[in-house]
Structure formats: C-alpha cells, structure tokens
Amino acid sequence: MRMVQKHGTPLLLLIVGTALGFFLSAHWVPNVAAVGRQDYESLEAFSNILAIVRKNYVEDVDTKNLVNGAINGMLNSLDPHSAYLTPELYKELQSDTQGRFGGLGIEITVKSGILTVVSPIEDTPAAKAGIKPGDQIFKIEGEFTKDMSLIDAVKKMRGLKGTKINLSIKREGVADLIDFTLVRDVIRVQSVRSRTLEPGYGYIRLAQFQERSDRDMQRALEKLAAEKNGIKGLVLDLRNNPGGLLTQAVRVSDMFLDSGLIVYTEGRIEAQK
Image (cartoon, rainbow, N blue to C red; front, side, top):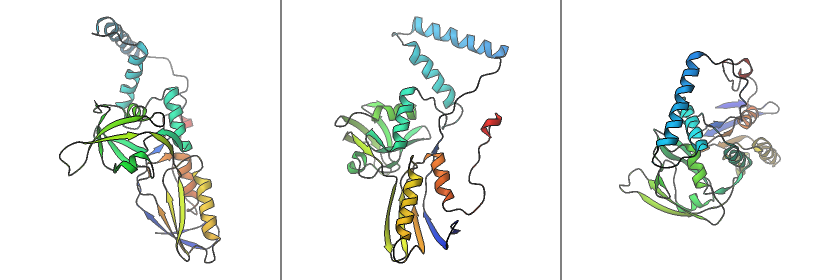
C-alpha cells in the first residue's frame, strides 16, 4: 500500500502482519444515577447470596475475594475485553506499558475460553524455552486454567527474578501436554528496533505499543532518513504485536497518515464520544 508522509517525499510502506488488541487507559466511572427498584431487588438478591455463601460454604471465605469475583464475573459476561483492575493489577498493567516487569515474557489472550499465547517476547525465558504463538496454556503450577480470567493468569505468572514456575502447554499437532519449567526474569521490552535492509530501504520492528513507542519510532525513522540514500521504502513489522496503549497506536499511525480519521470511540455518555 502506498502512503504519503506529512512532510517530504512519498514513502512506500509495507506492513507485515499484525495482531493488535489495544489496552485503553484507566476509565473513571462517573456518578451513577438513582438506582431503580428492579436494581435494588437484584442487589438484595446478591446480598442474600453473599450472606448464605459466607455462612454455609464448606470453607471460610473472604468477603473481599467474593465481591471481586462477582465483579469480574459481571464484566466477563459483557465481552472478553472488560475487566476489573484492583490497584495491584493496575500497577502491573503500568509495568507492562512501561516496558519492564518481572515474569516470563509471554503475551497471552483468551480464545474460546482457553488461555492462549499471542507471542513470546523476544529474548525472554518463554522465548528461550521454545513457547510458540498459538500454544494453549492448560495448567499453571498444576492448576487448570479453564475459566481462569486473563488477569488472574497474568498475576500467577508474574513474580520475582529467579523464581520458578511450571506450565503445561497444549500445542497443535502434539498429542500430549508439554511441560515447561521456567525461571522468571526481569522482562525488558524494547518496543522499536530498526536496521537498514539495503541502501534506501529500512526495516522497523514494532513489538508493542508502550509509553515511548512514538518517540522511539520517530528516532528510528530519523536515523534511517539520515543515511546516505534516505528512505525510499520501509518494512514495518507488526507480527505478533499484542497491542498496548491506544494513544501510542494513534500517534504511531499518525506518522504515516496524511489525513483522515484514525480511530473513534462510541459510548452512552457524551464524554466517551
């Protein structure tokens, strides 16, 4: 496809694959309107069930965990992308987008209710162990992941550098589960890498949309443009990119677009439009 830079000569851009799933920034919920009678009745039912579970369940249960589970269940019933972030999980999300965290280096999603690897991050324990895109994570530390939320799975796989974790993987074409013992490390994700393919033609790998991706992309383009032959063509490699910050995806896209709408949101509240 042919795109034109905002300034300078036309640029031939070849995009190689993409798998984008953008994380939106934290959304603060506005004041809720008066609750109707039916809503009160539903909340009363929830309160009664909560009391029954606390009193009669075979083991003692923590009310906070029950409420958090109810919230997650409610959001999971809406769509696969809505989730409740506790302060701890929100901090982990910030670590992701800042490009540094303790873990295995696996980008994951949920497909048909199964925890699935989008991509192992380059030069991480997961990549070195041979985990591949499309692998299905059936067990984490012996616990089946069926019906496990994405956030809970991420939380279980995160940890301090040097600690071990066991994963059981189902891979297409392999009859039995494959067991991996991985050692966690500090994961540093470099979102943009670039090199010259041949005079006048550059290659940029965009691994994830992080806080500094737009600046790193700009530097990579300037570095390629400063070479003797400039940029006649560019390969922008987005393969196995799991997404990241929507704002960064917009800013990077804007570098290659001359005009037109990039993205919009639609919501029931005017401020969401």
